[in-house]
Image (cartoon, rainbow, N blue to C red):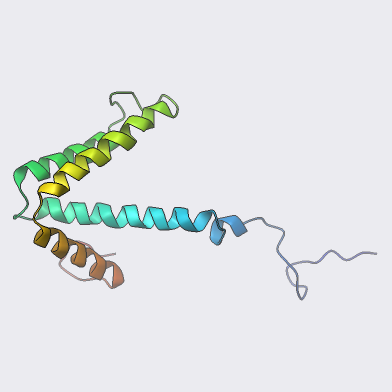
Length: 129
């Protein structure tokens, strides 16, 4: 009788193929990219709430966010692949022009708020976990 290694056998490997999800070469960059996007979205939210941010930048940031979540665009999102291509092009352009007008001190301060809040919850910043 041949024994198939089970999860309790010494040196056994699990038969569930979850390795690519947790620590694969393919998953790590994707997880890092998603974390970066999440952090940048929080920074842009802080920039949009700051009183020193020019009104035009606030409008461009909110239009970019709205365009990204709105299902209808230049090409509707329900059309496979092509529907999301316009989002991938238009939203970064709107964010680029919005951030370009924001004073560098405001960007640095908002970025440091988000980084410190993500490192440890800072009460009163609106960034609590």
